[in-house]
Structures are given as structure tokens and as C-alpha cells.
Length: 174
Image 1 (cartoon, rainbow, N blue to C red):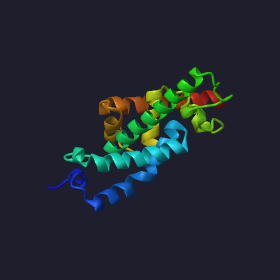
Image 2: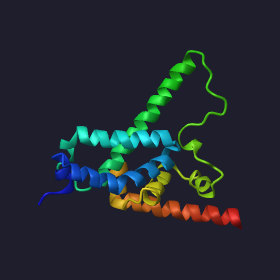
Image 3: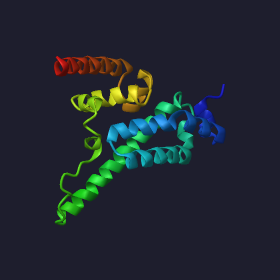
């Protein structure tokens, strides 16, 4: 039986089109929420698909190409943000001050949004799990693949994060 990953590994263009159709929009939406920047999200999605095409042999036997794609895009986003931070540090080291009030990454998300404000109170891992579940529409198994944690740990972090969010909301309202 040929898996979807095997089809991708062979370079099956229909399989790539199917993967793009099933995942690109939600991948972009999740990346934008994760890093707060549309330019990084767009580039990371594109880079992830290019990386999959260039290294398609790695997809042979991959049981869940969507989770693999999310992990690849997450890594691409991290690389882009780290590169920008290094470039900014070099520029700053040369004497150019950073822009006043400049924000990077998740700080650029509109904090006037109630949900964003609540999510900002979670740990980075909790926030990532919640955003992958809600905005990425991934299963706990897929999230475990993306962030390389056991599935049970992912489910527990999601449940704990939701409990914390409900408690924060009750305190803010009441």
C-alpha cells in the first residue's frame, strides 16, 4: 500500500497539490499567530513547501505529511526569526540603535484582542500547543510530531492551558 508520504517522496505533483490545498491556509494562519508577522508566516510556508520538494526522499514512510509540514514550517519560521535577530544584533553592535518601540515575533500580535491577551499569559509551550490545536487545527498526535513531545504530554498541556485561560477569564470578568 502506497502512503501519501511515499507519493510525495516520488514527486507526485497531485500529492503536493493535495497537501497544499489541505494545509497551506491553516499553516499560514497558525504561523501568523505564532510569530505575529505575516511576512515571516508567508515566507516560512513557502520555504517549507520548497524544502519538502527539494528533500522529498525524506517523506518516504512519513505517516502524517501534514504534521511533518507543520514541523518543517515551524523550523523555517524559527530560522527566519533567529536570522533577523542576529542581523539586528550586528546592526546594533555597529552603533545603529533599534527602532523605538520596535516589536518582534509574538509581541506584534494585536494585544487589544482579548484572546491574544489571555494567550500571552501562557508559557511559550502552552501557547504553542493551544495555537496549533485551535489555529492549526491539528490533532494531539500531529502536535506531538510538530513540537517533538509525547502525545500525552501535549494533551495534558492543552488541558492545563485551557484551565488556566478559563481561570484568567473568570478573574478578569468577576
